Structures are given as structure tokens and as C-alpha cells.
Amino acid sequence: MELDGIEAGAFSEVDLPEATIESIEYRDGSDPTSGVRKLPGRVSYANVVLRRGLAGRTDLSDWFTTTREGTLQRRNVAITLLDEARKPVQRWLLRDAWPTRLSFSRLEGRGNEIVIETLEVAYEGFEID
Image 1 (cartoon, rainbow, N blue to C red):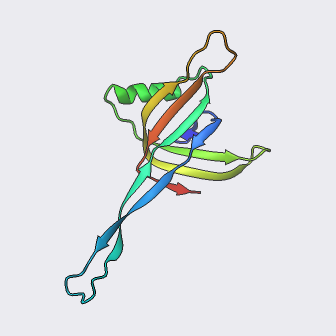
Image 2 (image 1 turned 180 degrees about the vertical axis):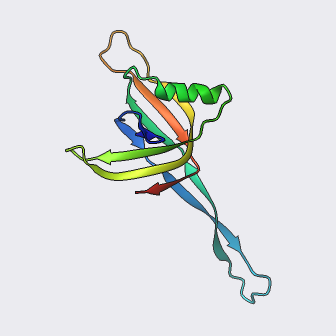
Image 3 (image 1 turned 30 degrees about the vertical axis):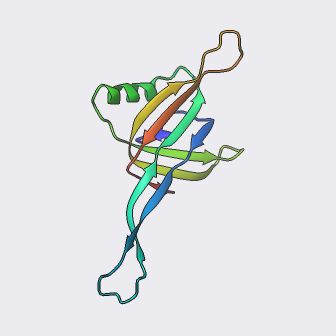
């Protein structure tokens, strides 16, 4: 993942971008049929969720903290899918993104599980590159 072109780490799991176009039902008053036409309406985007093992980096938590404290820093986010040889397969570009949620998995002192950091990001639109 990149934030404004700067590498921000690798993620083990990502809920990728999703867009939905609202369907608006419309009937023209002069139309002699009782049929309804459907027209495209507003586009909405589901938040992207990124998960990774806690690696001691603070760039994402710093971004979240800045937003929480009242300074909204919208950034362009690039998510790149890599193949087994670490070559790019697909790239998603999120416009004007900002963090909406930061969470960490449960810490179990007697277990061997790693702590998972989860960042949820809202955005204004996306492109596939």
C-alpha cells in the first residue's frame, strides 16, 4: 500500500473497493404506459478495510490520530496486488481517502498469535490501474 506515493507497508488481508450506483425509479407524467423507468443515481463507496500483523510502524496510527484530533488529511491510496514473484498484478487507486477506524486484535499473553492491526478507510472514488 502507498499513501500519496510513499510506501506504507504490506497487508495480509484487504477488503477491496466496492461501488454501488443507486437505482432511481422515474415515471414521465406524459407517458401513457404505467411503466417505470430506472435511471442511475448517486454512487456510494464501501469503506476499504486493511489488515496486517503489527510491525512497529506508526504511520497509519499517526494518520488516524491526526484525523481524530480534528485535522482531516485526505490522501491518495494505492493498493497493489502482487503475484508469487512479487510482481504487480492489479492496482486500485483510492481518491481523497481518510481513516475512519483503527483497531487491534485481542492480545493473548499465553498464546502465540500475532497482533493484527486493522485500518478502515473512506474515500471519494477509485480507479483500477
